[in-house]
Length: 250
Image 1 (cartoon, rainbow, N blue to C red):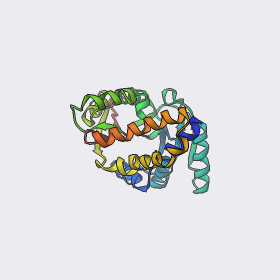
Image 2: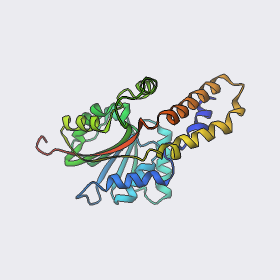
Image 3: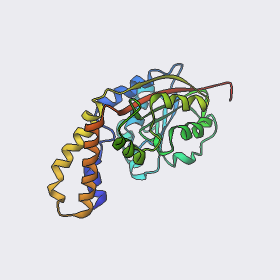
């Protein structure tokens, strides 16, 4: 039951519409000197970003995730799009990557770096990036300091390491990267692409599960998520950050 309703509520929302990949393209456009690069998409999920990167670059993309069902979806989609030779789906944890040092021109992560925390992930993944290579990530971000206690408490539980773009940049510099660029997504982006559709799904299925306790709890949590965003969206959103590995430290 919980898995079924979770899919009904959240299935596919992490990918959103094609508008999301316009920002992926914008971020990737900050990278220079790449010709059919080798990329690692960490926490690739069902593979929307991995496929977008493959189409965008003409290079090889390896998607890594712990969810084997999502990886199978990625394999199927890659074959359907004629990208099976350039897109691989590999099971594994971002905390314990087993690739050779300097294996990738680019490591990319959209909506997953919070699992390790920005500083820890950048430090751990650095050895897998060739000298002068890149790391790009997209993650939830405080738009400004001084957020109200209610939303701070919520994010402390969901993503304890959420920070401002400036704080992410400082963590990157301490991990021996240069910051090439960063940008916040528009304030209304997540309302259009995620919270608005989620609110509609809650409305559509609420009566279906009204008398089922596990489902009611999940629905209430989802409703709270929507309400908090609508109340406090001026305080948080998401941002892209593009980094280059410094060559002087190997």
